[in-house]
Amino acid sequence: MQISEQLVLVTGAARGLGQHIARAFAAQGARVIINYHRSADAAHALVQELGPRTLAAQADVTDRHQVDTALALAQAHFGQPVSTVVNNALASFSFNGDARDKADRIGWASFQAQFDGSVRGALNTVQAALPGMQAQRFGRVINIGTNLFQNPVVPYHDYTAAKAALLSLTRTLAGDLGPDGITVNMLSGGLLRSTDASAATPEAVFDYIAANTPLRSVTTPAEFADAVLFFASPWSRAVSGQNLVVDGGLVRD
Image 1 (cartoon, rainbow, N blue to C red):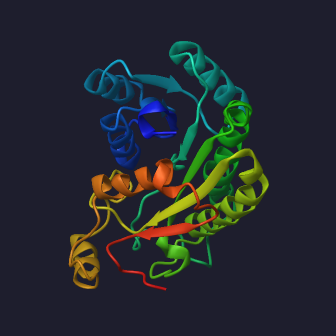
Image 2: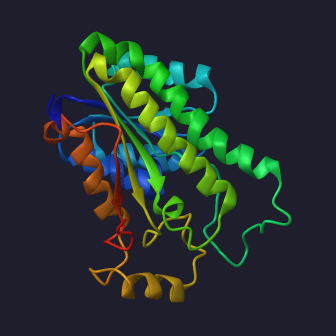
């Protein structure tokens, strides 16, 4: 299925990286569900920008009922089921190594919040979209990860553990859903210059990252979003269960 024929759910699409992913799909002619939790104004502004092939849909992805409701409304609006899910929504988090919770004081509640956002949220969206994907014999699930579980240069314990679990879910879902024509993959970036989550990162950190990448630059949200399109495109039809690192070459193993 060409990208222009797909109905794409992008979670957490009103702001940050999700907004750029929504724009990338819209530019390719896809119908796009701009999911948001609390950022209603930003979501509706993005719909105004991108036009009638987009729809703002409120849902807390950790609540399965809300996800089911949002997808049902989108299917009724567009007249087709969701074919592609991009699990981008991020539980509240700030990438500031100086302010992070250290190993001696981080509590399980921090882990729980990140696991709910990354793993529970992804499970909810996949299960909600699955009947439509199975009926089409086509589906694309694209999970957003991090290069920190390969190169934990800053030990964000809760965030990194949750994304590592999401990679495991990516691979087990790929094995389970492959016979239905559904691929499941992950893209993992480093710090992006810049999003709401990375706004607290000191400029010196960005400069250090840029100096240590082959491209001598920090990946932007728009550049990362371009890579997401690959896993939704026909060019990736034989790729599943994979993790593509998109960080300018910073992590190379």
